Length: 480
Image (cartoon, rainbow, N blue to C red; front, side, top):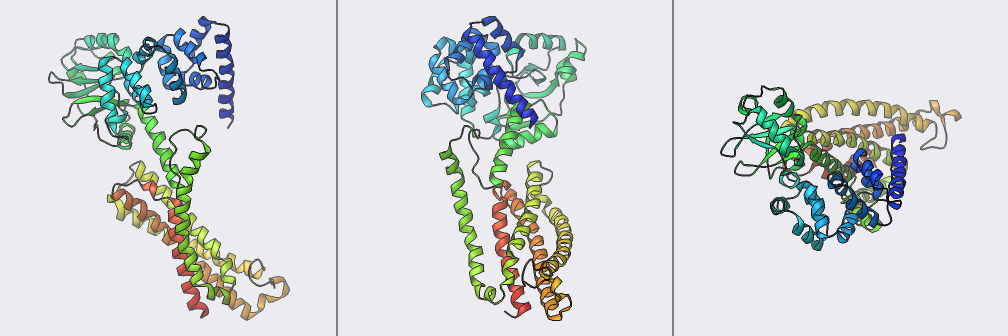
C-alpha cells in the first residue's frame, strides 16, 4: 500500500513538473526528462493533462526515439485525440519509431477512420506486417508477435554478426536472442547475445548456435506461448507459420502482458464477472452493470434449485424448526471447502503442473485429503454443535446453566441433531472437493477454460446436493 501511495505521489509530482516545463517552453529540460524517466511513468503523468495539446507539444519537440514507447503507453482515447492534431508527417515519424506489435495493439482500440489514417502513414513494409498481424485470431501467437527481430545466416562469422547487430539492432524488439537461418531461410538455431560476444570472432554462427530451440505456431494459444517462455526461461520464442517459416517472435515483455491478461480473465470468471476490456477506472458504471447483471441472473436462476429443495421439505422443517438453524453453516462450509480445491485446480491447470491426463492421480490425491478434512471437520462440528445447543445459542432457550446437562431426553435429541449436522457437513465437504476437481478437469479435457467453472457455480451445485442429503438423513433419523 505504501509503495502504491509513493508511486501515486511520484506521478502527481511528475505531472506538475511536465506541465511547468511545457508552460515555460523549457524544451531542453523536457527532453532531458524523457531521457531519464521511464516511459510508463511519463505516460501516466501526461494522461492527467486536461489539454491534449500539451502532449502534442511533447511529441513535436522530443525526439521520436524517446516518445515512441511513451505514445504506446497512453490511453486509447488520448491517442485518438493526438492523432487528430498531428500532421501526416508527424504521425509517420512516430509510427516509424514504434514496433509493429505495438501499432497493432493501438489499431485494435481505435475507430476505423483513425486506423485508415495510421495505415496510410506507415512504411509499406511495416503496413504489410501490420495487416498480416491483424488477420491472426485474437489471443494467438500470431496476434501478439512482433516482426522486428534479428535474423542472421548460419555461415556468418561472429564478428560479422556483431557488426550487423550494431547496424540494425537498434530498431529491433530485442537483440538478446539472435535467430539463425540457413540459405533456404529455414530457422536452424538461436544464439544468445552473451554467447555471441564471448565466442571466437572467426567462429561461424552454426558452430555456436543452440540447435535444440523452442518454437510456436502462429495459431497457438497465447497462454501456451507464455507457458513455453516461462518453462524454458526464454527472452524470446520464434513464431513459425504453417509452412515452418519464421514470421515473427514473441518476447518476454509480450508474455508479461499475456500473463496479466489471463490472470485478470481467470479472476473475473472465478467470481462470475465478464472480464473488463479497459482498466477499472476507465470502465463506466453502465459497462460494469452489463458485465455483472447477466451472471447474477444466471446464479439467481440456479439458486431456484435450492429454493425448490427447501420448499419440498417445508413440512419437515415445520415439524423440527431447529434443522433450519444449521442450513447456512452446511451450505457455506461446503462451498468454502470446494472453493479451496477449485482454486488449486485452476492454478495447476493454468501453470501446466498437471493436465486432464493426470485425472485419476489427482482425484485419488484429493479424495484422500478430502476424506481426512471431512472427518476432522465433522468431529469438531459434532462437539461444537452440541455445545451450541447446550448453551442455548441455537434450539432450546433452556441452557446448560439451568440444569439440563443431565436431562437424558434433551441429551439424546441434542446428540442426534449434532450427529446429523456434523455428518451432513462431512459429506458436503467431501462432495464439494470432488466436484471441485471434476468440473475444471472436465472443462480442460474438452478444451474449455477451467476458470469458467467458477466458485459461484460450484457453490450452487453443492448447496442443492447438501440440502438433499441433509433432509434425507433428517427424515430417517427423526422419522419426519
